[in-house]
Amino acid sequence: MTGWQMLLYKEVLRFWRVAAQTIAGPVLTAMLYLLIFGHALESHVKVYDQVSYTAFLVPGLAMMSLLQNAFANSSSSLIMSKVMGNLVFLLLTPLSYLHWFVAYVGASVVRGLVVGVGVLLVSVFFTELSFVAPLWIMAFAVLGAALMGSLGLVAGLWAEKFDQLAAFQNFVVMPMTFLSGVFYSIHSLPAFWQTVSHFNPFFYMIDGFRYGFFGVSDVSPWLSLGVVASTAALVSVWALWLLRSGYKVRS
Image 1: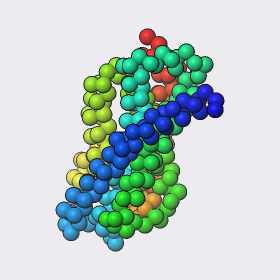
Image 2 (image 1 turned 60 degrees about the vertical axis):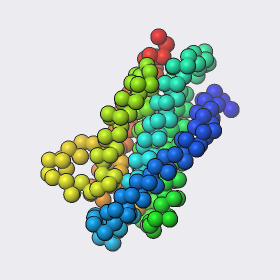
Image 3 (image 1 turned 90 degrees about the vertical axis):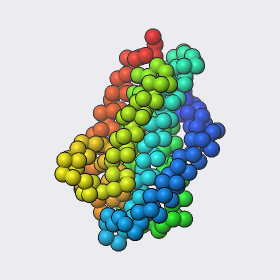
Image 4 (image 1 turned 180 degrees about the horizontal axis):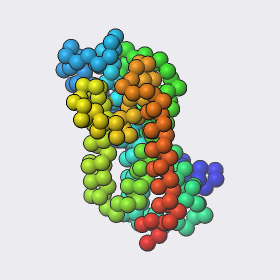
């Protein structure tokens, strides 16, 4: 293996060896959401014609789990290396900042996709899903995981201790994912909150991903793809700039 391939392999192996925590745990959490919200609101909420509320929930929960775990993978890896003091060994290698970026974000994409697929697999016990546009599903899954992996790099570089990283996740990532239409359609919101939702890039990731299953969405999937792709590009450039400058890594 080349250097960046070895680093990618190491990052994938890092979460795979504790799969009960990094994969099975998030899948179980999503299954509990599906069990509780699906059974409680199935007969009371109707979002799309010919789509049950439980089926409506599944893509949102899968994407939410994918995004949160892609973010957690890169951010937790960096902060653990910084706190434990073993990040210096990576600095001694001839790996460039591009190699770091590809390895950390690549591992985040892998973990996010594995968790997302796991949620979809367990959902077959609760409802029947359709896959109207599989290419849209893959596009939003990969772009969303890459975006959150890059954002995790930014958070991991910025944070100096676990408390700061937890604050970033609790006050930025969690609210934006829960307010992105996972459990509802934004058309059910008042006009003001519908407008606010359109400024949340997480909404476009959820909505575009859901379009791939049912062929219907709250906004055009092309608009969602444009917003997600441009946001992913901006966050990636931000992460690359921080890595290149050695922000809080070489100090």
